[in-house]
Image (tube, rainbow, N blue to C red; front, side, top):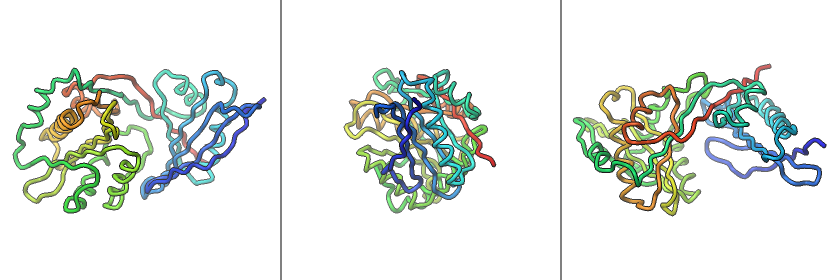
Length: 295
């Protein structure tokens, strides 16, 4: 019997996206797989959908994933999306599934972890405390302070030229409202957002940032959300400076944290170099796939 596909009402709604969901079940009603389609709603990304499909190990090769994919693709087309993105661990069943169903590889990613117990914290502290003429570090928890909000939002264009290889990711348009909404969403999940930023001392504007999201109980692993420096301020070691300070702060404020997680495009050699310098160790590789929805 083919799996039964049920469309679900997903309550997740953010300032930048909404989600559709489907459940696959067998002839006895037992769930055997699911699909979530994230539809981006902000300016610059209205053409894009992001897909996650999961199938129970024992149900693979029984048309479950294909049925879920068909439902998601049909919905994406009806929403006038130009392309779908999906990610899979390199060499995994998901990797093979996406490749066999018309998705093309557009980006290779390396995931890495800094085990805090083994990190060279004296060396990292030395990097964080090294002065950089014309710049200073600032930091905050949660929502950006009002007096920094405008230039912090403007500094987000530092990510516009982040290497994305063949991905039709669009351009994320940031303003103060979006910055505040993103911080609020993290707080509602019960997590802690810590931001380190670089300030240009000539005018007090933010020219770079590094964000870290920590579990609410301060245990387990924290996740880097992004590190970027405006193009006109690159070449001064500011990315390394901020990330070292983020590590120092995490270790001192959350002594029970196990590690810090990050993922970086293989083509982003500069950020990979920063991670290597600070002691991050690769854990696995993943592939970003894209399905072009034309016609």
